[in-house]
Image 1 (spheres, rainbow, N blue to C red):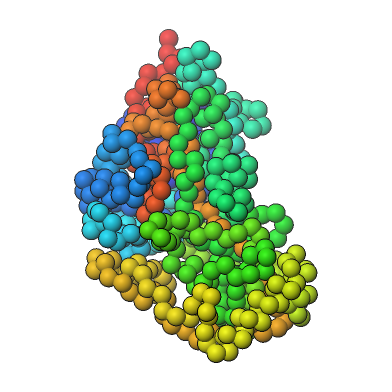
Image 2: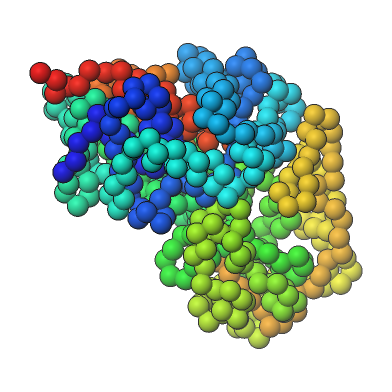
Length: 509
């Protein structure tokens, strides 16, 4: 149903980088991209990300820093060296494409004090964080180079020789087949919107379900196709998050957003109706992780959990970020239909009750426990103390970032007041509740690839004519610095494009 020299599955930064590099390496070679989403919603997580590009000063510093972040989740030295040289080579490649890469204060570095962090900077196009600032010019460029995109085309199977495993093309969900005379590049993202894969690979104790802020079209197709052909999987338990978030759309959608209230009359409660953390610590998470007892575990919102708040927040700003924001799916795609707190109640996103007992019954929590939690908190708040979690007191950190107001000079590696002291507020009726869950920005796992972006089989040998790029099998195994996925997508994409187009066609006479 379609044929080209190279078939690329996906339409994000990894796929586009591969497509552009095919053209640069062999002008006149044909490239076809298969995109699961319709045209208006194409681009995967890249399009709705911060579009940060992580680019250390030198490969040596990149290797030193990321090896430290990997911790005990070790990655082979040859793969790390190839990655380090690749991400540091991105700057020249992007500049050659005519993009103006400017340093960003965000995640530069995200973990100051870690070995190698003194040479870490993230860059953005034209100084713009988010707003598809990198994805859009790459997308336009790929189209200008003559790459074709088949939208609404979800690739689900590889076409290959059952004996040699040589890959000839792919088959889509609707039964169409697409021939790749030189090879296939899997750049179709992760599995954030595949509940089965999330539960099997990303579940932590008490957390089997997550919300996601990226593309709802990322359903793990590349993972499943890799399994089909016997690829080795790696980093399947690794993902980047952003702490607990709120459901932003009614029904079963897992798409979420943060909350916009500037007030403090709210609490997190678990399935037993009890608080489980200092609510303001969420703002300090570093892609979902926060330092505790010498490690960097995920900030996990137990299932179920809820944000409970009072009339002050309800009568102020809308609780959801319902304006077009600089990143996230619901923000950039403007998918939220609730434009006010009243809309949220009508849509069933917010549950309203006049008493704590009534609210508990409506959301399935033990009434006595929730009544006591709110009463105890209000009694202490009236005295401006929180004996349980010390909320309202200053919280110190060596890193903090707010895209709207501030950047942090991490070079000092000094403790700063990341959350200023504030007076506690009582939570006054009527009461409101909205579901919260641990948030998944993107998964990192998938078929393992080598430094040439070739997909490896279960023995570690390259699968003929099969390449991958982007978050599908990324190098990140534990702690993650912002901009790392975009930078890895550019590097692995252009590497895949260069190597696949250099092959002779399998169907050459």
